[in-house]
Length: 218
Image (cartoon, rainbow, N blue to C red; front, side):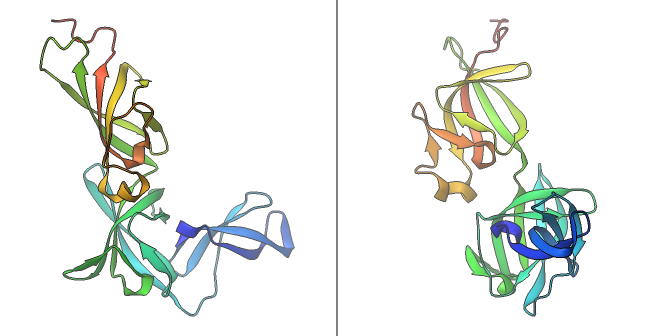
């Protein structure tokens, strides 16, 4: 799996057809690997030799929809929920995070050897949807305004800071962390000024609505 950014020596048809250069393994599957030359950045497919490489199914979830793909790795490689790797499909190349490891019809674990896993359950983390619940700052009404924010997974949110996305402007008061990211943070909900979380780790934001026309009807 490419979660560990495996690097292998290979010849590069673009910059070094005679001598091997270091290549980063981007994806594996179907008996071939997609690799990137670290010298010139050329991306190409190569056959990687390994006697213990096995292929497994991956279910990828994004915004309530799912698709099926495959991933290959050494059967003895340990995998853990929360790890991320690259999945390549006919439609796109996506970075995903493991949310569950299925070893059998009724068996799921948080940690296992790659070869023991029958299906990897994952979600897309390079671009994510984050639920936002906005409250009026003046506190005169109990009404809230929820919406979903589409954002790159590596974007950061900080409690106490004001963020602006298009027509929306809000000051974060709380960040609820996704279950598959619990180990990356000290608490399941962050609510102290300066607390920071990545969008891909965020299940929901709570914030004061700072939009200029917010609650103008009141």
